Amino acid sequence: MESTRQKKVSRLVQKELSIIFQKIGPELLTNVIISVTIVRVSIDLSYAKIFLSIFPVKEPEIALRKIIDNKVNIRKKLGARIKNQLRIVPDLQFYLDDSASYAEEIDKLLKK
Image (cartoon, rainbow, N blue to C red):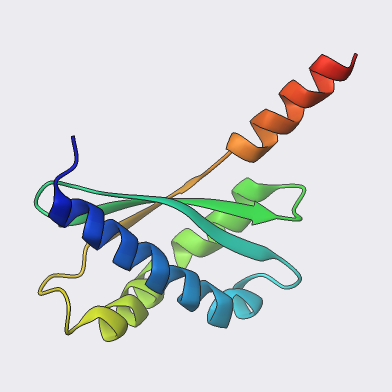
């Protein structure tokens, strides 16, 4: 169960990362939308699991790899944006959020 502080930090990180991906997204991946869907922060606020939806891409794993390769730069930008709210910038771990593709697959199966 998440504490109130974890929820607040999760919302803050999600909001700020969304803004960062709007700005640097076209540099990393051209003609792609990167959406931060879920952020889960550890109890000690030192780690953050970030789930991303990346579309329209045929190979989202390759796009995720580019984001992971630029993790240091993204964390630095996040730190500059949240330096007044948090003492420690959490370590970022990026994952693909495949819930949209899963729902699409279920929808296709139901239509058959």
